[in-house]
Length: 177
Image (spheres, helix red, strand yellow):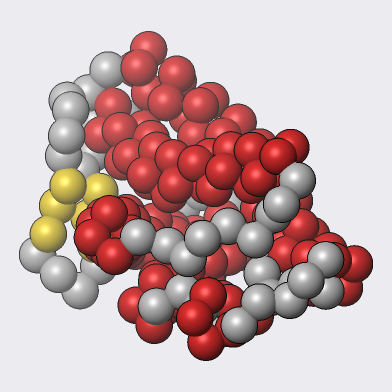
């Protein structure tokens, strides 16, 4: 497959910034949930706050990322094979949905449990809905399921970028650095 000019086909600096910061925040949110510790411990309170902050920042940056994408667009796709182009668009759409839906489900889950999402260090409390135990169970199950599914999608996204770099030898991976 032909290589393309990295200078003309690169993502813009803000798009690259949003991509990598959101990735790091998702990794941090995952880490925080994995290491948070048992209920009632200081460790759990600390790591839960880290998780809330990371998720809230993902949502805020997702709004800015989408606005930037709608305003500036993205470089043309590199895939000349129709199926790869379709799969690429499908995965990118799924990833965009994830960075909006997953934080919102987390906020709704906490709210349905009767609590606002409180961001430590700020006098900011996010409450979108009131207490509802049945809804909390639904939102929790959805948050966990979608989170687990999207770790796989994120992995496939990364593997596809590496395949483009190693197998197809195009600039797909370089465009995001």
